[in-house]
Length: 335
Image 1 (tube, rainbow, N blue to C red):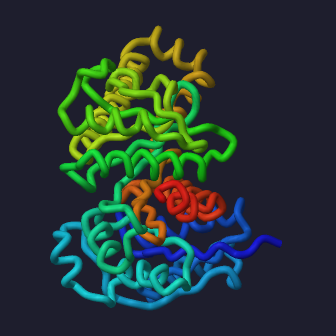
Image 2 (image 1 turned 135 degrees about the vertical axis):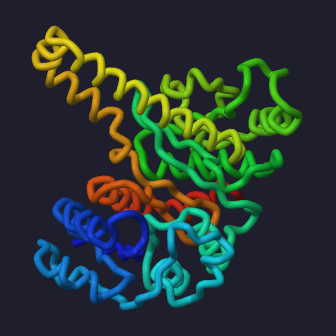
């Protein structure tokens, strides 16, 4: 039997918690039996929900606290709120090595600040990065930074490339990491001085875990020719929000077009299986789970507005990160 993976779960973070968190754990538990869930939150709210769920009692523990980080809290206010909140205690659990990884659907800014207050940086890394998973025509891509660092040096971007490729190899061990820098053009002379300097230095790095493919423009992000896309947090966050908005626009317009006429309704009925595949491909719940990397313990951020299916998928990301030895890969490659 595999050694149990211990996941510290902030049960109170995000919309409709702790219900969606517990239902997400129940769904995840059905397909992953080697996980021990440590829930941090209000036992009085958790117990009535968990009582009727199909979760092995030997694989779950509730650490009671009535304090939680609110969605409207600033990062400073959240940190000031104290060490008794469910988010703080969950992060402290990985700091004390009583858990392998921590996950929260709570306030993103608060999670980043509290994680940085509790956890050490990996040696030789100056800034942590927020990374996420994007679908492409050829599979999945890792994209970072998604907003943790507005300004970055060439060293930061090189670190992000190494950490991103390590993350990709942890999640998809059979594939080779192909790294690109997000830029306004594919030519070497395009971009600001920082990104041009980063390009030159990445070209000189020889690493068996990744291949540097140069610059990539925004219109090629989903092509799948590269699978690790690097940007500063300002650019990366804009790219993320633009992609999310475009996906929402396409699905809503398609639905509107198919349902406004009898011919459209008949066509949608005939193509219902293909439409379901299309909808599933763009379902953000399947790609839920941003990863805060650069710290000496892994931290996963589930989208606050996702449902139990999305939260379950972010738990699967947690398992892959631990099984793929992410932290060890980063330490090896960054040195």
